[in-house]
Image (cartoon, rainbow, N blue to C red; front, side, top):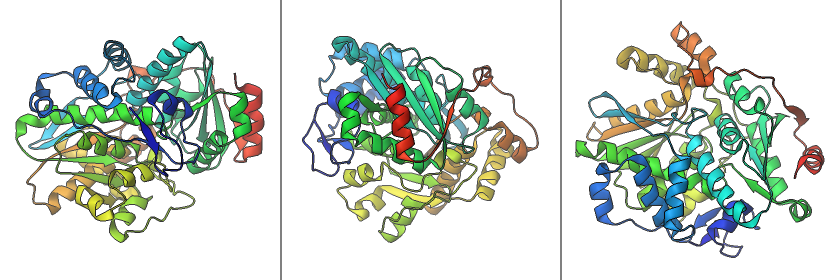
Length: 434
């Protein structure tokens, strides 16, 4: 497997170098030089396979021998000991639940795959590694859980003060050990900019081995493509063209879906469903990419991204052609008031409890299917358990849903508060990196 930068100003690298480097030297993003198409027989019979078997087949296809097949299979089964069920709400309407991992968010798929593959390579070399990651909500908890206690790896997580839910904050600030949290006075975009600047700091990189667990790291995206294929496998019996609605902020999740499509997964089109930080829906409408700065705070806080990092990857997958992208992606945005109505509608119409992010995906799917006349089967992605947003759920629904045991977190908050200046962040790193 060879990967290239989206800016094409850096040498091609192998999978191992790409996941440990995180960003290419030219500040682009790594993307496979070639995304292989899996055999027609795989897609014909994938409904006879479980999630882990589908994940293994796709990983072997895209990694192309970067990890021996037997060992890769073992890593997949270790990392992904949970599933992604497609729950039927109504005729031709399904919700793909991606919150059955340890942190109860879709980012568990990528974080645990990264942790197991990085640990695999580090065991061979005996080296140490520092993970730097910015989070707008769920990434932090998933990375904290995925890498907690992994020998030879230190994790530093940056999150915007007051802009993540209480449960999300607890998940990333109460573990301790090899997981450290920085509470940044700023937005998620500020957190992300600090991490990117650290990766471009040659002096820092010469002293410490750094890697990212954000969706800028290709090892986060590859495993997210697996559950798209599993969604198709579960809905194949409907014999209808599929529409998949993705709640989108940094656009790694949707990019992974497009990668699955490139590997041969049948899909009519995707829906990029956003909150009012509607950079990509605006791009699809106008053909011009114009970031929003600063990002606008919303109920669906994990999607409050004004400059989506993965957009260059998404653009590259369509060869920079907005018309090609429009043919496979429809973009819609929704306000907080609309998001609240979506949460209510899902509960009152289908007795289904869904977080604000899931509501945005549902609204996007509903709008798309109304426009195309309902000829398709639709699935919207539920990226986080509603229990992570209990105050919001109680305010919208008028009662407090039961909190699952996995989210009943105790422990003392340990976080370092910091201004969003690189000098202070760099000084912190030089004192805490291994």
